[in-house]
Length: 473
Image (tube, rainbow, N blue to C red):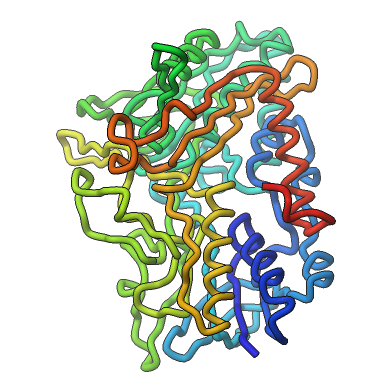
């Protein structure tokens, strides 16, 4: 009997558990243990709606225990504190008690640590800004937004800032959705003229989204994501500051430095800024108790997998990106979703004249997390049967899809629907753009709003392993 422990029940870890259980159910008596800090799965993409008060957080969640019971997966609610890869066990803190879980195979899918501390004054707990990164954050953000609405209805004016809170942030897409939703919600309330809005981001240009932007051909004309984002910001009367790092935030002021080395100050009354992501801060220890985190992880704490690390941005190619998500140090350890370490960025990095780094990190959430988690699970299934890992999900080969909500409504809603192939530019396969732009999609409209809602319900259905869940892509 093989024991597999999966740490994290977000998109990547939970999907990996479902895929592995399905792959092994007719292959003998094998054990899968899913470890998660919280008893519920949260559909993170819909927290943008929670953060504006349009849906309750409960509509984005389901209980993990019934799903695990139905599939015969052990669920352990606890916090991972130590990984002992030489001895094939992890230490999980369960009800404040250290508990040892032995494994034959390990999948690390812990998601990120929200590094608010990297920017003084950032965040809802110890700072002056709001967040939509977790259910409690999004719920609190909605309350603060509705309080702002109340002040605007009384005749006050406000300055609103949305974007990223550090020069090395990712998930610009979620912030883009949020500022668009704010604009349209205030417009529907008749309050938009009382609010100045600013998009503040570490992207080198609008519409970069940490993926070096994208292109789409329509007849002889090539459109870009920069064209789309710029047009939307102009239409929404949103000012734009990109290529910016936030050094600190005070109660009403944001202090930035841009790629030209210019220092600026922006006043605000309400701000939602995504923090930098790092790896979760648990320990990696060898059989003698020595710290081997540098051996297992990159400097940001993300787990190294079968990528080609150490190359500079100009040297990176599509072939340097991971495929199987297997650790190069311990062959029975895999990492997926946000937890795996990419070999570099795909958006062009920049260093300001003063040495401040502006490096938009590649997003590894949602559909991308599923792809990597599924590959890791299927590779473990192969190894249990004595075969080498053969399932791949290279981001330089797989397609990407995103539906960015701009206005949440069945009748008057709007969303930007984006499809590209592949996620990471692959100049060897597509010499002109690195992507198959003839097959790319970029549409804004009501159909996208329906698709966004459909994805919300489809993923929540699928990840509860309900009938025919495997046919939902």
